[in-house]
Image 1 (cartoon, rainbow, N blue to C red):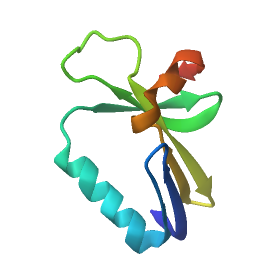
Image 2: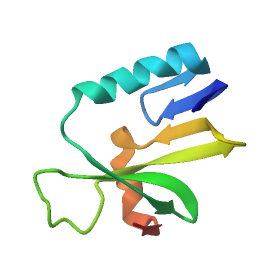
Image 3: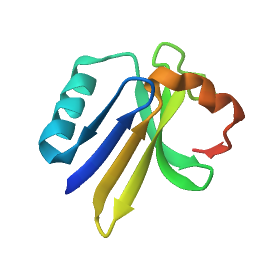
Length: 94
């Protein structure tokens, strides 16, 4: 589902390029339990909205991950986990 030349920007942390490097990123999330993911839109773009699982009634996401698509593959990921302040001014839709 991801493009061979995928690009990942973990904002304020690191950038990874290519399927091999970006695959490590998915392993990191498998180890984390501080998120609840929901599909949505941010500023009209496809995104994953990340909510705090300890607050099931939360109406605002903690942060988001933007997804860029090319044909039927994910071509870019921009993860704001370490720059969660951007959610404050963002328009989003769950």
